[in-house]
Length: 118
Length: 114
Image 1 (cartoon, rainbow over the protein chains, first blue to last red):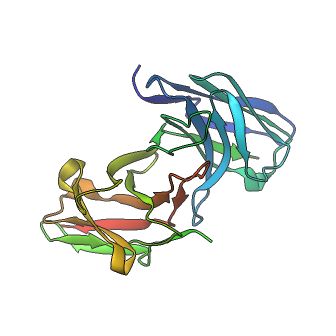
Image 2: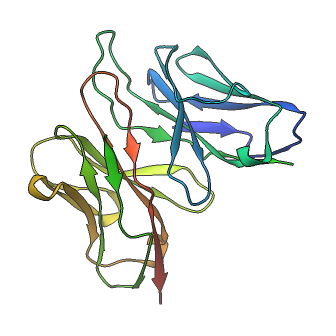
């Protein structure tokens, strides 16, 4: 596998279900991101992890719960979602930031998970 | 506040014609600038980036972009489009100050007609 992979590619879930999205990067990067892409809206940054530490939570509802066990893997745990949460969820990675802050290098994206909440 | 504007929501060009997609940014300092392309059902692919130096940058698939500080613009160009270029194009900007994230434009959808 190369680049950034995401599984599953498509997911349909009911509002009472619990599911997880998985992202894996094979680029040796240290920062990982979750984005939400809805129709006719700009790309929305949800979470940022840098060296496994969460550095950004962009006011995301608690029904979305991220997990980053190591620099290569990122999960998004979903529970009691709403129909308006239906969207394409994109994972990305980048070289990341040093401990003293620093540079936001270019981000490499996975193919996304198309989520439909019924 | 930092922002990236792509004024054109949808552009249609004929195959073989030239293309220019517009991007304007509003940042406190010179940002890092990127163009991404997204084909239907896919993630975003990096086309090219500008960090510093030569203001005309070359990317993949025959694309280029020019950074113009005076106009706060970073327009994407291609001399002759191919049907496979039909996709959504996103301009993005980031900063090297601290912990800032990328700001994306709303995208321009490109349609190619035979």
